[in-house]
Amino acid sequence: MNDIYLTKDILGLSNLNYSKHAVEKELIMRMNNTIPKIPLSSGLRSFGAGPCLSWKHTQLNQPVQKHSEPAYDKAIYSLECASGGTTAKNAINTAQVDLQSASGKIAVIFFSDGYQYQAPISAVNALKEKYANRLCFYTVWVGNKNEAAGQEVLAQLPEIAGCGFSTTVNAIASKEGMADFVTKVFFEKTPIARVADADQDDVPDDQDRCKDTLKDASVNEQGCWVIKGINFDTDKSNIKPIYYAELDNVVKIMNNNPGLKIEIQGHTDNQGTAKYNVGLSYRRAQSVKDYLEAKIGKSSSLSAKGYGLTMPIATNETEIGRSKNRRVQLKVLRY
Image (cartoon, rainbow, N blue to C red; front, side):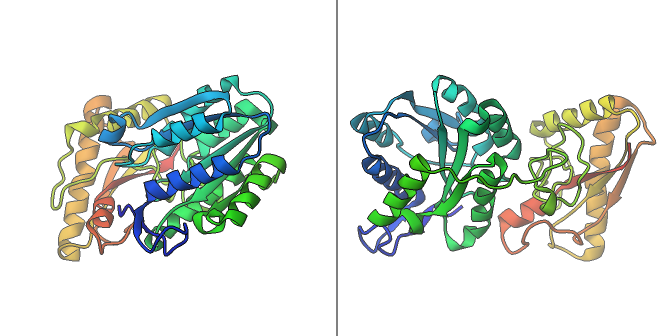
């Protein structure tokens, strides 16, 4: 993922390339300096995954406490870096504990590029359930042109919360824009309709191609049950041991739903001929079937089918996209 955000003087600093992390820090600093002196508590949590967070995924930089502009500036300075994959769901779930000492209205202000992760619907729902009408959710998109999908992800979060709004770095970078943002967040309430997600799989119904996902099943961006996290190597069908836990979760779901009938669907990227990829995709599906049957015994409830390169879920123009397409997906045929 490209971590460079071309400011083009958006921040009024220079025509240089700044990392998204640096832009976010600058924006939070400006927000802190714009907030008027009102009775207020504040906290700060960062998230990501990588060595700069000691691989913890999320880190509390300041607990919720009486707001002090200098203290909050110090917390902002402690945001040393950002790296690795985004774990927004973990951070929002942890925020439930962070906010326990908060009183009165709660504004969750969320800076991110929203790129390459699903809207954490269940996490925001849980936060909203706990804090009800006290809570509003505000998102600020800091991303590049090739990360436009992330803006759509962030736009869903205020909808889920039923209160708040989504904006962008461009809209709040100026003095006037930040003043308007602070006014709306701290002095106004903007309720909006909640997004529908009938099967609670973190994919809104209007984007969900599989609207009957079973509880605890991992899904892809289209809401369909997948062996999440398993990326087959090019031209390989073996399952790596690090993915066994995900498969064991499938076993758990099957044991909890004894009437299930499942088609295990194998898929490939577009490397190689269509005919070859049909066979390769079948072998991937069969390897998953073999693993599951080793746990539950031979079962007519499981079938394996290879779809080759015909059903990509991502671009085949990049290695990241191709790795997403080298997957196994589960389709429930009968409960």
